[in-house]
Image 1 (cartoon, helix red, strand yellow):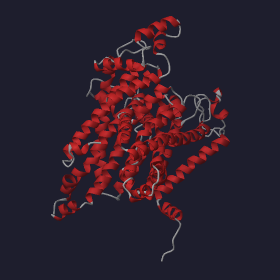
Image 2: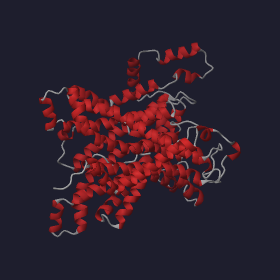
Image 3: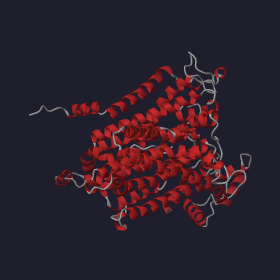
Image 4: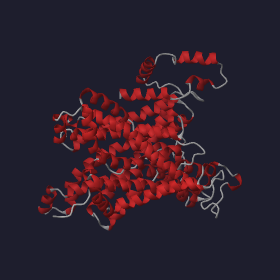
Length: 293
Length: 303
């Protein structure tokens, strides 16, 4: 008989063998480190205060990446941007997932007219292309980082609702649910204690993939001017602010773009890797996709 | 579609700021603002307003811009929509054509060098923000090499100028979809190529070219077509950014301008139009789907 390992140990072993997942984890850890370091090196004063005499200066020892049009250190703003991007990714996914998962859970579990009504509402939202819906909501709410996060969160609700509803419909047919019903468990108990735990893996994978979509879309909104407002340094905002000097200092717009690229790639790798490890059947449902930005 | 109109209208209502105030400017007295609110019907109940708005939409009257010229929204759309349509079609054409090529090559030469390169490149493009790619391309192709114009649109449609203006925006807008489609086609091709009937076709001694293009591709194309249709939404959303970066006079840039100027009727009209186009294409894809896959019939396609 072979030695039995703890399931988590098995997971860790498989994870380490999955090169994609490891690469993703490395990149994401880098992002987290950058975000954490911003608390030490990039206080709000440093990223927001303007020093006119340094405007559009090139690389130097004091300012490794130079300064933007208002004389603010680009490296510090990039680090601060990492913090914001991480915050955006997590909160957007949090909003979308919590509302969407509950909707899908209720819809799939109760069926009948509840399901019909909820799914018609979801259909209405799905009639809008994702990014367009986000632009519309963010535009109507008024430009700010907080509204952009709310808009993106709402715009992703239908995706989670659909996904969870589908999973619940198939889980409902399993014998263990039947057993719970027979043993007299209440509806709420079955829903949250028996069905929901089986969705955690799916949601974890999907959520990870969606973090990259959220970060990319927020960059897009901020670039358009309907996301974060000055002086908040998000990467998308920085790209749009530093366009003016891009011919003198190509590096100034290269850096934030590269930051977005790496971050999105990191979460994509991690999500894909987790998917293959946790639930390879999901390959059909979930694929890495850009936000169309 | 009715639900769509409702959501669009409801969004307008959440929009902060008073349209009457926006039309008259900050100097107008409270009484004039109230009078205009009355005239515009802004004091009536929400559902009544929605009903009368919907009635006007059905008659293709989307109201007027609250700023500057006070042009009818339908006129603004008519002026800018063709440019966006051209851009989206070009991007779509590019994305599907190249998506098909790289997807097939990648699948047929799976795990060879070509495949690895294609997969790396598509992964990069999926993670790349379009507006950043656009800025970098402008630096290289417009400023350093001077090959392509960085802004505006060339006319007339189909002329050399038009093509020169279209290359960069079309490419930038299409890359994400191209990368996505390529990956989809690769995986569905690989799946199909492993199927029994393909082995049969090969065993019959059919040339590989015929096996790949006639037998395998036909089935592998089904997800490709679905995703391509759905990607149109991403393209319409992405066009907003692409147009803004390239100062391309399309409907997306117009919409951003309207949002920043709090010009509700214009935003409303454009969002409604784009959602309508998206819904219609999805419908068309469903129909096309049935042609491609005779196993799916109307009854089974519900949902």
